[in-house]
Length: 289
Image (cartoon, rainbow, N blue to C red; front, side):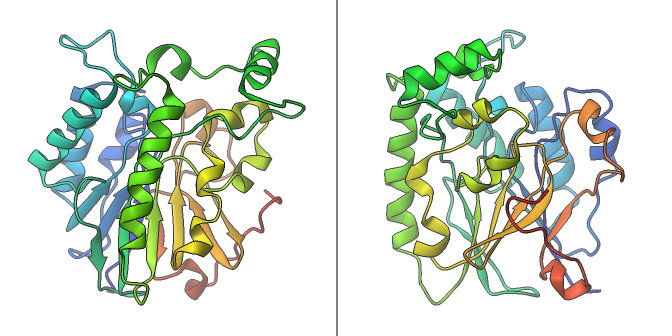
């Protein structure tokens, strides 16, 4: 069988009904790689349990953080926050042999390659404004009025940065330098928890939530840098879309109440390479769920 580059995200293993699905998650060959695009869980012990399990099964696991991993959990004995928490997550992953945004980008030589799997950590800066908003303050006010406010406002501490958007801008600047230094002859698989473009958020039931879903600073990355696929999660709307000729893959599992409502059982993991289109799948255009 052909080795595959696979992906999943938003496993939320702290939800008991999600754990059995993660325990059943297995490669198709001994050479399969797995991308884990954030939100494995809220607590270090849950995150470690899942990544250790997956690292033992797949030839390589590439992880990027989501907002839930960055939450300062009151349930932990020694909670840390902000950049210190992210650094602890990186240390945890390296101890398990899991690749992170702080490591060299991994070169996939299997079917559909060669490509560089670029693990990114780019946050959000509220620039995906709520409809009718002129700035962040108005956008947040509209969200509060609609009772659609992300828990990040309480649990995601940007320390030592003054704000989450300051942390986001720092990560964007650092990541742009790394991507610009990549060999343009080798396509990229861009992996970030939050979508790099606002387009995938257009189908959100609550458009006010988009402000916690990315930044306009990365809107052209899929065309500016030679991109084969853009992989993300966060929205809990698993699907394939296309933008400017580039495939976007939302690979999340989501919460049990969400995946139970779907017509089909969760597909874990999703195939990134070889391209699913090579096997007869029909991608959904952006804007049509």
